[in-house]
Image (tube, helix red, strand yellow):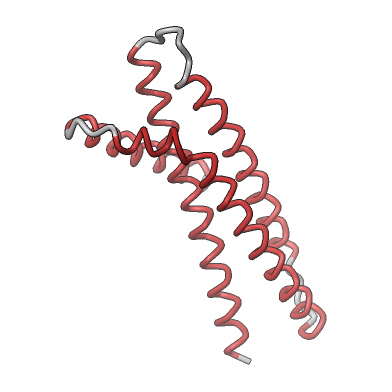
Length: 144
């Protein structure tokens, strides 16, 4: 349920950002996403993969020394990796649709733009979540 709530929040935030961008008659955000979204998504994926590798190593050490099970943590890391791969594929698909010369209706383009923004926001949230995991691990270590 929390997952659906987060996606709904990302879409609402994206609609507000799109409306604001349109109100200000700014093309910056969409041009930025057209030019850089895939690069950003792949970079965030690479950062998170490296960070998750370190987290898994530390969790494995803690599991051995403290006899603590981190099965849920491992599962969450797998889910985050799958989410990021889906975001990259979704980003490609949306940018292909955005770049079509078929003259799509304005409503479709608005939906595509909103989903592009939501994809970016979702990626930032995954990055935030990874950073929180690192800080929680550091706090856990400092309690010892």
